Length: 140
Image (cartoon, rainbow, N blue to C red):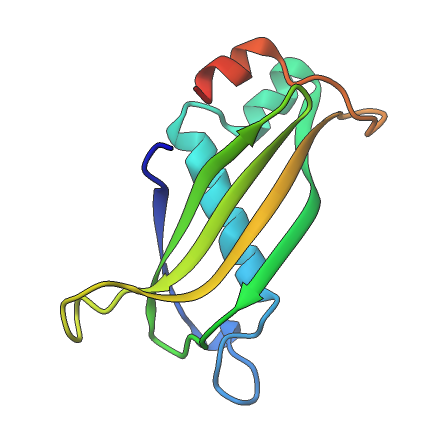
């Protein structure tokens, strides 16, 4: 498997709950941004794809596991890595890791991990359809 794409995220007040830790649903937002930037790094802008092909990716399944909390001002590394490529869907494994380089050098600490399945749909009808071949080629 290829090395995971990495996207930096800093935790702001708006990301935290009343307890001062990252609100659990925000990890879905962090994962979404990392997937979007991963696709962009491969030359696949989601807006351009929709305009050029009439199709788009939508999340069809999300499974997350929370291990440790992130807090205000933490610096995270959010990853995205293609696990499985089908004709009409992709499965991406993702992690949110605490980047401790500024505190004490060492391995990042795993905070949350998930498996996200995205399907390709027709933008007008939202019905599942095959991912165009040129997109699948760029994901190789």
